[in-house]
Image (tube, rainbow, N blue to C red; front, side, top):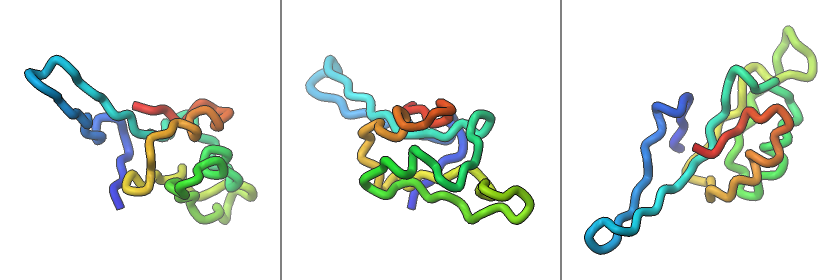
Length: 95
């Protein structure tokens, strides 16, 4: 499982064709920890058909919240961007 915690940790995926004229950049989801509300019922995770989001266990101190922000399994992720659209807090970004 490949996981990243900040955009700077995420490698830029590139595919070049010919003499470098065509360049494809793949975007991957990143969870902005400053915006994530850590909801146990994460909407971004709920819409992910690939089950790439791993919602963390419930917090013992804060009912209804997870211990931490969800993790994203980049090996499962298909870069569809549905998670970004589903997050009402705008905490999930395709970068």
